[in-house]
Each structure stands twice: as structure tokens, then as C-alpha cells.
Image (cartoon, rainbow, N blue to C red):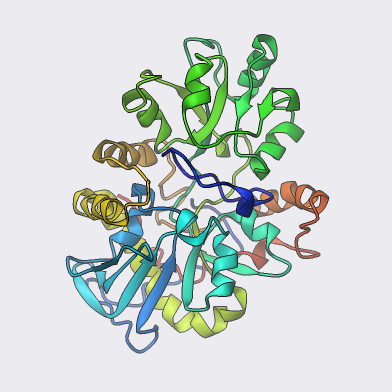
Length: 388
């Protein structure tokens, strides 16, 4: 099984079962709320902090699984794992439950899941999903584990040796008669088309998550994917292809949304603030610790994949490649400051401006007058915690 569809399109629920960030902002950043090496969440947080991801366990989620120590319990039926919530090897006094998304929640959006199940405190939500859901299910992002989205378009460099980015790929495909295959309804693709980087005639929204059509095209077609997985998978694990691909991140093509941002229901922000003030720095530190030494957490991720046994295939090789690529491509970074996890208001406003007409045309118009400050806050971040 290949990587997940990007849950930012016009109709995520319609996707069939698969076969296969820092910058300036208008919000303030807090100082560290707790002494290094010791955090007590018992007075301010729920007895169990429930976190909802957007897919099966993988290295991109490593910062969350870093929160678990060796004493964890797996619920294979519910595709979740729970245990004491740890901070640098010490218990914070509360538990954490990490729930899988994607097939585990019927391919529902995480935002919808958060509003259906109020036990979920924090969930992974992409910026464009937050824009689309802002009218009826508003959420506020409080921590950005990914500086850039790993969403990308990939192509065969042997077939298209002169292609350097998505725009030049679009020109090459028009000449060759090839297409870019993607999960239909993706907002980023509507942007690539409307901006002129890809002509609509060279796009094909029938991607089903498998490598079959890409391999059969023998390099003529391009395809969506995730920089943290597909380049390795296609070169080393897809026997029908077995060679390198090139790619460009959608972020670098002008669609700078935040992927898998940790969010809360906007109406619960005030109530959750005492917990978030202590918890968000714990999430920051978990990310720093994970990328400093990911081996043990990746072992946990692979164990969960095995125990969940839902058709999701994820190897040690992919996990190792993912960690390396997330850092090398700047997908995980401190951005333009010295700490991890903050949001840039200008980037979020750009996504609002791009997506509002797209979603309005599909009868899922965002909240009237939506602005960047409605979708995020940097107030809980600790400016001393960053990747080295």
C-alpha cells in the first residue's frame, strides 16, 4: 500500500480504501513554563491526552510516538496506542493515547472526527482543511511539527531530463501527452492549475494509491506523492519501477500550507489553555528528541504497523529514509528562527486567499471574512526549544 491521500481535497470522505515551519506571525511566543527535564501535567491536563493523527503510524508522526516510553498498550482493533506521557524519559503524570487516522476513521477528515468525538484534544489538520471547515467546524492550530508539507509531484528524470520543477514538468507533459496523476479533488492541484503551472489537460484525478499506472507509463506520466516516502519506495521496493525519481514540493511551487498541524477545537481553546501552555513545549521537545535519535521510536512505529495489521506496509528502510529526507529537504526545521513549531501568518493568509474561491465554487465556502489569525496561535510555544 502506498502513502495516504492528502486530506485537503474537496471530498476526502469519497476517497476509496487504498490498495497499495517557522516564520513571522502576529501571535506571541511564550517562555518555557517548566524546568528542563521535569514537567507535571496532572493539575492542568486531562488524565489521558488524546491525539488524533491523519494516517497510519509512520516516521512523520515520530514526534508523537516519542511521547511514549516502553510501557505502552496497543489496541489493534481501534488502531491506537496508549501509555504514560513522557518528557525526556520522565512521566508527566498523565497518559497519552495516539489514534491512527485514514482507514481507522473511515477516511474522514480529522476535523470532522474531532467534532464527533470530544475526547480528542489535539488532531492533525492541514491548513487548507482548516480553511474549508472554518465555517461550521473551526479549529485553531497550536504547533506545527512540519515546517513544509512533504506533498510533492514526482517524475522520471530519464524521460524528462530538462525538467527541474512542476512548472517545467507541465510544459514537458503537454509536449509528450503525459499526465500528472493525483487523488481527485485536491485543493493544491486546483492551485497548480489556476496558477498556470500545470494545464488542466495534463492532470488526471484517478490516482488510486498504487504504483501500477505510473510504472506502466514507463516514465511518460508524473504522479503525486510524499517526499518522505515514495522516492525511496519506488526506487527500492517497487520492482516494476526500480529507479530514482525527481520531485518538487508543492510548498516550493507556491502552495505553502502547513501539513499535520496540531490543532484544537476553537471553542475549547480557552478551556484547554492551561494544559496547552505546558503540553505544547513537551511536543516541541519530543520532536527535537526524536530527530536527534529516532531509532527507538521508529522501532515502536514498526511494531504498531505490525500489530495493527490493516494492509499498511511500512519498512525500516522507509522510516530511515523519511527521517533523513524530512531534515534534508527542510520539511522539518526551525524555519527562519531558532525554535520549532511556529506558524507564519502570511503563509496562512496566502492559503486562505488561494482556497476561498476554490472551496466556494465547490459549495464548501469558508467562514465569511476568515483571516489568518482565526486559524492559529503561537502563544504556547517555547522559543528556547529548537532543532540543533
